[in-house]
Image 1 (cartoon, rainbow, N blue to C red):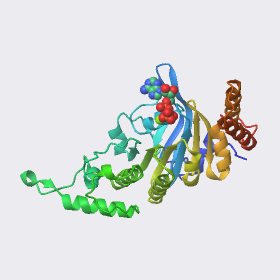
Image 2: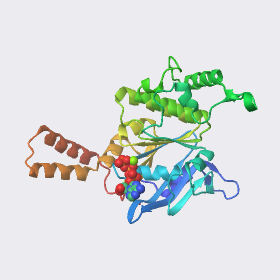
Image 3: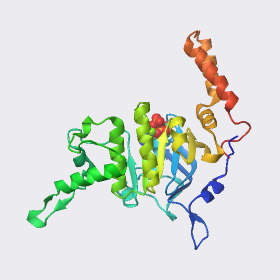
Image 4: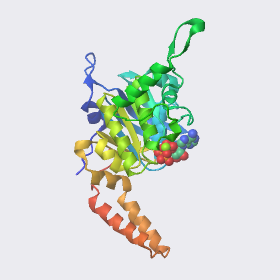
Length: 309
Ligand SMILES: Nc1ncnc2c1ncn2[C@@H]1O[C@H](COP(=O)(O)OP(=O)(O)OP(=O)(O)O)[C@@H](O)[C@H]1O
Ligand SMILES: [Mg+2]
């Protein structure tokens, strides 16, 4: 059974201790963070931590607040409640540039790539290497190609030709190039917003493997997904969001895939849906399946715990 741990326990779990205050220092830490847009409360009382060499998964349905959360971390929006600390220092980031300077890089699902440009150009886009000085300064094409090749190889990505237009790569391969790029440019924290959402099973597997590669290179990874089957095998911690609230924050050892799936699906809601479909006169196979799933989920769901403790 999933054991729900308190915010303080979680924050104390990983990370080193600050010698002055004797409190744990995390790469990133959010403590009771909230955000509203006008009178819409998009996020409230969210607590999580990110550490070197660990993958923190953020799970939740549409509108749960996942994007709002990462926008705060990536410097696109600012929180209006709680605290956000980077390496123990309280921060409010006012631009993505500031986040990048702090070592926080985000890879979005709709990657900003220039499809017709070669892979190596995209890898160095905006940070081109040059050679020579003053009027003799020009792009160091050979070095950029070579670096792209070696960096991709170091992540275990085997691309035949870095001269190939990036638009010819599959969605999964493009995600992998973006991950390798963030690693090369010195990211300490890598945020991946639903990198597997549009991918098939095999391609998802490829991206999940690179998430582990980034972790093994010492990055703190934040992996946002709808899919507990993608999160569970790679995650060290799981934050579950629902309508802007945290409904659970678990260490891997305290939760099983079945429990995570049950928490995500919300057994009671599925049962309600099945009932509603029945009322609408549904006699289809889909109804049978929804009913069976609701029963299975309810059988699995951890009971008698207050999820917002
Ligand atoms: N700029 C904005 N202005 C007003 N409301 C917003 C804004 N951005 C998000 N919201 C609201 O905040 C809530 C959380 O949205 P958010 O985009 O963070 O959810 P999400 O978990 O990323 O959803 P999805 O899975 O659909 O991407 C939603 O109710 C949304 O309508
Ligand atoms: Mg989103």
